[in-house]
Length: 235
Image 1 (tube, helix red, strand yellow):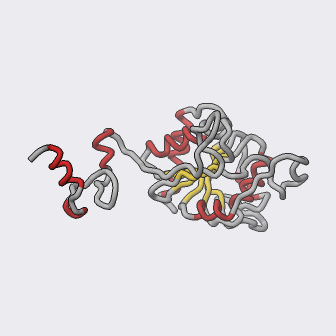
Image 2 (cartoon, rainbow, N blue to C red):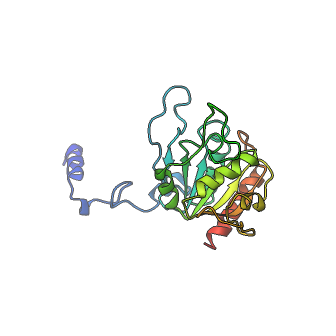
Image 3 (cartoon, helix red, strand yellow):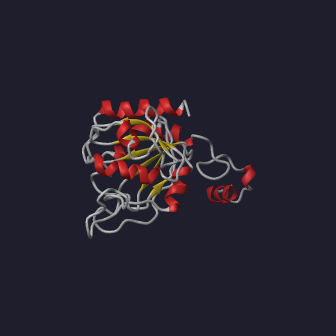
């Protein structure tokens, strides 16, 4: 039998007679591991293709969904202050630790919220969240929200994002901030409860000192991994 005929027979074999491959219902679990020599994950990424300079990076509304809905990281936008540093580096560290992590680039995560005292500047961007984004977040067991360096802004952003989604969240930010700062605006937190809760979601931990647009030191990545694992085991 010629090589061409053998190849033709293999292509036309019934599915139940085919050896397990890399894709499809008969695929081997972790079949990539034997080829790459490491733990791997498959994620579904990118809502639309990027265009122009930086088109290879994730754009607004990108939702890279992990196979298991354990953790979702919220990035406020696709700018260099969020993507690729520090969100991508944190995501890589968590995945390297064997955790299933999805990433959502918010459609409107840049700027203050409409309900912030004083409101937004005329003509400035306003941050918010869509019902679709709320549904995407709600599929997961835990959220990690990457915020910025002005507590007077980002505590209200956290309140807006957690308003309608009942999910525990870890806050990662640059500015020093405590649980009481979030509780003051109505967000329930693990050690401090607000006088009147205004969100369904709640904050279980905080990591500060993570600088936007800068490489995350290894000790901070390890701190984030440790806290995520701790809380996942207790949810």
